Structures are given as structure tokens and as C-alpha cells.
Length: 236
Length: 293
Ligand SMILES: Nc1ncnc2c1ncn2[C@@H]1O[C@H](COP(=O)(O)OP(=O)(O)OP(=O)(O)O)[C@@H](O)[C@H]1O
Ligand SMILES: [Mg+2]
Image (cartoon, rainbow over all chains, first blue to last red; front, side, top):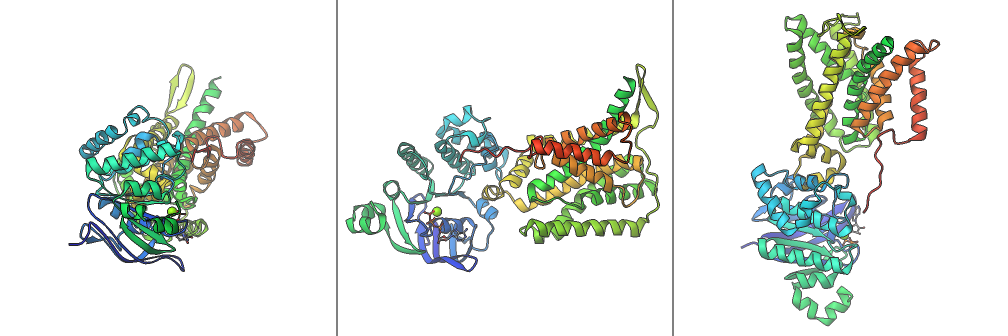
């Protein structure tokens, strides 16, 4: 049986430039998987390929059906929520509007149920719902981005560098939260990270990307325990 | 004092027409970063359609209602067929396309209806009403009520409905909107439809005043553009405030500053706008781009 998300021979191009050269990886339903790698390795590009934001070829099957050829908005409606690098905050809109937008494709009854679920994770959102999202702190914006993704009632969440620019304590909170969402909602999560330590601790499985190719992959615990792997690929 | 009140009301009437057209321009500008130069001609075409329907026996308000539907559907179709192929292109390309539409619509109207001035029936009684010892034109008041009512409806649609939120988000954050499952490209088309409806309504309001002919919106669109820039080209509220103040200022200048009269009103209005923009380059309501990243 094919995996929940099954990527094979994925190639991505920006104009003439090929940034990802035929990679394959898979994500099991209900798991957290990390894509690791240095600057420019192709982590963001791979996530964008799944969400439909970059020219790609190869095959991406989600829940048994292909995603290649689909536009971003249709992929979102299939149940994939993408929190892009930089969090994608809608700065000038209020917190409430940011969340409402996440629930755009749902009917109002489902949207209400989602809102309650999201407020259980983020009780502070309720009190600050009229505040402009751009005035939140970086950590709060990251939380809001995750909350907005959850509002979509997705089956798969993609997160691009959720720890970027956050203080270590907040990074810890973000990863803790992602694990909680994974545990309590059974959410499948694929995240790209340069912070290999935190990502390996949170994930079950990880792949290391190197200049557009997958250099290695395996259970996160095994990768984290292997000194040679750590030194040559993860740099910590 | 009475004259001042009359001038202000008549200024608000013209101003509310500028405001509507300015809002139509802003709606498109916010989502595509271009001025739709054909906006005025779309309004003119719609007005001709309403006139034609009225000539064929439809009561004027029924003709307006039917024309609004036609203006909406027509503009959505126009966006899908003509603008869609250049959606991602450089702004200048889109500007050229809208200029092309401008000439096309103007030519089409001239070809079908000719260039002879036509009287357009006023939907309002032309008799004045007296409030104390001041006489106001019911026509002016009707124009103000209809225009501001339209603007209020647009405001409520954008601010209070889920569709309006999606329209706003698509204009400001297209990428994020797509990720939320919003069909941004259709939102653009919807924006064209709404702008066209607002424009059509200003056409209905202005036609009884200026007479109906293919070039009737060209003066208005210049003032509307000025109003939009004055208010801050990305701000719908700015467009409305800009339009109303421009209307009132022009009326007062025309009435009280003798040497200005009608010929110099346009240059004087532009001089005022340039001065405002020197003080506030983003316009009165321009967005301050201060965000925390
Ligand atoms: N929009 C773009 N246009 C052109 N080339 C791009 C674009 N985005 C990324 N690239 C190129 O594609 C390659 C992979 O970039 P990508 O952003 O996927 O890397 P990354 O692993 O996410 O890096 P980082 O850790 O810096 O976010 C790089 O060589 C980069 O220069
Ligand atoms: Mg990246």
C-alpha cells in the first residue's frame, strides 16, 4: 500500500534552473516527518511543490490520488494546509479575520467547530481577536499561522521553518505544540527545518536534503544518534 | 448662507459620483495594481444599455436593475476572457489592454448609438424641496442617497461578509489566499463585476445631468482618478472622502472665486491635489507600510 503522502522522482524548476533533482520520500498517516538540510538545499522548494507553488514534474500522491497538475487552491481544498516560510501572516487583517480565512472553504457549522478546537490550543487568540495580526510578536504570529492552518481542518500540515527567527524558548513551545496536535488530532505533519536538533526530537522520520537531492533518510532517532551523520550533514 | 448650503449639497452630489467612480478604480487597483482606464467607458456603455431598455418600454428603475445585472455579468466575462490571459503580466501590459478596451467601448457605443447628445430621463423629480428658506434640488439629494447607498452596500459586503473578506485577502495577499483554498482568480473577476456595477450606477446618476453620449464619462473619470489619488489610491475610504471633498471644493470654487469659473476648475483642483500629495505622498488615507515581520 502506498504511503499517505508519496513523492516520487520530484523535479522542481524556477525558470531554467532546476532546484530539486528527482527526489523521493514518503509520509505515513499520523506521523511527523522532517526535511532537513542547509541553506538552499531545496526544503522550501519541496514543500512548495506539494502545495502547488512551483513548477514540478514527477509524482506526488496524496491519500492515493495524484496532486501534480492541481492548482494551489484546489490542493488546499483537498486537505493540505501549508504554513510558508515567514508564516504568511495577513498583517493588516485582524486575528479573527486571519482565522476566518483559514476556514474559508468550510461551511459555517464546521468553521465554528474548528474555531472551538483551535481556541482549545490557543486560548489567547480569543482575547486578542480584534488585534491586527501584524502587531503580534514573531512567536505569536507563528502560532497564529498554525492556528489558521488548523482552521482549514486539514489532513496534512506542511510547515516551512516554523522555528525561524524565534527565541529558543518559543522554538521549544512551537515544537511541543506541533507534537500535541499530532498526538491529539492525529495530524500528519511534514516540516522543513534548519534547526535539525529540535526537528529530529519532534519527528519520527527525517530526510536530509543536499543541493536538491536526498542525501539520507531514516528514523529520526537513528539519525540523531549517528555521530558521523550529525557531523557531516546536520552540523551540531 | 442659503447659497452656501445649496452649493455644498450640489457639490456633494457631484462628489458622490466622483466617489463612486473613484471606488471602482480603487477596487481594481487594489487587486491588480493598475488603473482600469476603461472603467468610465464601461459605465458609459451600461448607461446606454439602461437608456435602450428604457426606450423599449421598461420603466427607468427596472431598466437600472436589469442593467446592473448585465454590467456585472459583462464585466466578469470581460475579466475572464480579456484580462485573465494577462493577469500575471507586467502592470504596463494590463494598462495597455485597458486602454484598448477604452477605445473599443467608446467606438462600439458611437457605432451603435451615434454621437448625438441624448437626454437621459432623470429617475428623480426635478422639482426643488424647501427646507426653511433654502431650496435643494431633489435630483441632487437623490444622487447623494443612491451613490452613498451603493458605497455603503459595497462597504458592508467587503467588511461584514465572508466573501468580502476573501475579496480583500485576495487583493492584498493573493498567495496566502490561495493556500487557504480561495480561488483568487475568480475573486479578481468578481472585483471587476462589482467595480462595473458601481460605475454603472454613477453613469445612471450623471447621465441626466450631462446628457448621454459616448464621451460622457471622460470628464468624470479624470476627477475620479484625482479623487482616488487624493484619498490614497489603495484606500476605498480615501476614494469616497476624496471624491466628496473634491466635489464640494469644486462647487465652492466655482461659486465664490470669481476668476475661476468653469474653465479653471480642473487645473485648480489638480493644483490642490498636488499640494496635498506633497504633504502626504500616500494620499489622505494611504496605507502606512509599517509592519512587524
Ligand atoms: N523563487 C525562486 N526563484 C529562483 N530560484 C529559487 C527560488 N527559490 C529558491 N530558489 C533556488 O532553489 C534552490 C533551493 O532553494 P530552497 O529555498 O528550496 O532552499 P531551502 O532548503 O528552503 O533553503 P533555506 O534554508 O535557505 O530556506 C536554491 O538554489 C535557491 O537559490
Ligand atoms: Mg527555505
